[in-house]
Length: 522
Image (cartoon, rainbow, N blue to C red; front, side):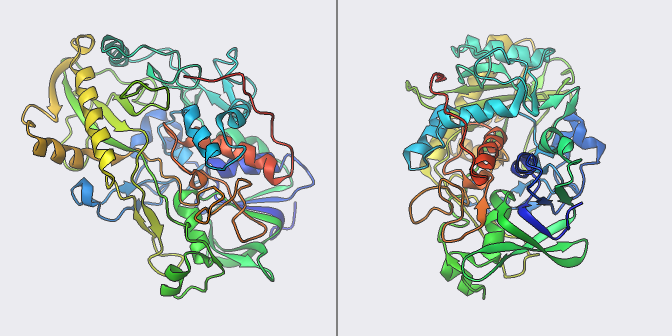
């Protein structure tokens, strides 16, 4: 085995990006890789059971973050589950695998992030997967991540998709191929009836390599520097022992949209004035660290009492999504409707028993609101201050309200008539604009997609450049959802995996895979 405390690459965070990086970098037997993770192994059997994902939040597997009170969601604080476990949030999420729309990535490239357009990332989406649709040019058949499309959808799911078509939304074969808009079955990271986390897909087969060391229960506290701007390692707390993990080539932060900016700030990399106020010496003045926070909101939701008992899902309770545009354009979809086979509500409402109701959760895909992640103190053990500034941009409330209208139109259509008892939420009592506004504020909930807090770009507010190196430093990279300049249309995990796949080539100095310019989904 390699000497435990000295490596070529030290990766902080064993979530989706970290698992990809550890597996890809350690393919070269001459490279010594350390992967450090604050949580432990994913040995809780509830992780593997796809039906248990709604109940993992708040457990020992969760960092249990909370936001500040949100003015535009009735003053509520929101739980923000993030995985504290090997596999990260891919051990907690709903297993939906949605790449995003080409316009999402092309927007990055147009803003100066050369090499990060859709054509650039498509070969990495393909490399990452083994898909049941591998015959399609959009998909791969030999990658680590197994993708499933349900072959036994719930009858409520089938009625929901038929309702979408009844309302004029043309069905699509899948969300990750030639057309994103329209009702279709979800693509899921489920294999042999069990969740397949990023650790299952990428890390499990790599663990036998002598050049890869995984340190669980190992929490990063600060980055360590040699003379000048060269990051040389990480100070960690490993099972109660303070240690230094040295890197000869680079430290790679893959701790997510909360963990990565927090670690930078504690290490003196961030807005100089904020660091000064906390008594932290500023090493590199980067005003963008912790800014540009974005997240998807869903409403929980447009709730219906069922006329018949809702059969349990064979998968993960949410087998279909409907993406759609609010106007006649060819860009990314504006709205998403999810058919959830459970009564999904926020803490503001009372939920019926499981089996007695189903929910059309609805949301908008490209929020204009921007929030922050900041430090509460100079203590690395203190929880950060998270303010997503939900619905602070007026355009977001307009889109949220439009999504509610569409959800109710779909929910009230004929194809769901056999299952629909009556609408419970918002319900017939919600009539005025004020009542509608109040309902949206109280039903808003995170879709668990925080990104953007170490934004990639070339301008003064960018934290990393297109090479993902932290600006003003050497030997330090960020590779996770925090580098996204703007949020993708759907769940972000698929895009994070593709980002990490491409980053593994960039960091090792390998030529990236050739862009695929011949395919352009609608």
